Image (cartoon, rainbow, N blue to C red; front, top):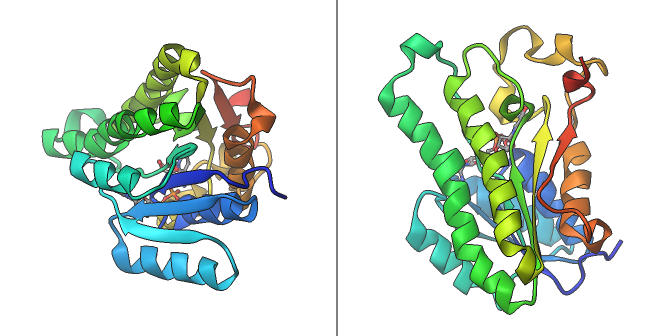
Amino acid sequence: MSRLSGRVAIITGGARGQGASHAERLAREGAKVITGDVLDDAGEATAAQLRGEGLDVTYRHLDVTEPADWAAAVSSADRLDVLVNNAGIIHVNPLVEETLEAWNGLLAVNVTGTLLGMQAAIPALQRAGGGSIVNVASIFGVTGSEGYVAYTASKAAIIAMTKTAALEHAVDKIRVNAICPGGVSTPMNEDEPEGGVVPLTPLGRRAHVSEISGAVTYLASDDASFVTGTELIIDGGYLAR
Ligand SMILES: NC(=O)c1ccc[n+]([C@@H]2O[C@H](COP(=O)([O-])OP(=O)(O)OC[C@H]3O[C@@H](n4cnc5c(N)ncnc54)[C@H](O)[C@@H]3O)[C@@H](O)[C@H]2O)c1
């Protein structure tokens, strides 16, 4: 398990949930990992726990909507090989009840945060001679879902931005891919009524975070050396219907 030894990765939303799991998995594969989040206490605690297991994980405050935070995070690393744009937020509002404030707030984190991350990371990835960006979209970027107009718009945008970035930076040997998880058990959906997407998921359950981290690790590593501009669906069969 050393597919990422010598590599440096930044993972946003790394304080908890999927981001914390991705940090652990990439570090177990040998990467030096920098996690960023706005939940500083949880972020520090997660990184400290992983360091206690012998993993090279450090936390820093990184609000993905703040260009200055991005600049500081990238310049804190001696080099950069992998960026996982994982931070994201969600809310439920029927389309006609969606407020401009809620819409703008969600797009600022999910879409603008992903753009700013790629803009900050790409020069460092170029200096490293190439690298891998993994953008976290969702099955809700591929299909509609009632009540999630802002979230579906944001995740569809992430898939589209991923393809454009892949085209623009193939020449730099920077691969850019998206993942589209289905339901995953994390704090994001613990309050979801009636099991959320589970009744529509052929495998009949949510994913464990580690099942998503395997895909992120694959895309980050040289095992995916010919994979760019794609969206990898990890959904227990949800979209097969
Ligand atoms: N949980 C699911 O079922 C599911 C399914 C598909 C996709 N996703 C996506 O997976 C990603 C991870 O979500 P999760 O399920 O681990 O949920 P989560 O809520 O546990 O984690 C999201 C993390 O992003 C952080 N974050 C929010 N705003 C931020 C900001 N401005 N700057 C930096 N960090 C910020 C949060 O503090 C949190 O730690 C998200 O992009 C989410 O949209 C989740």
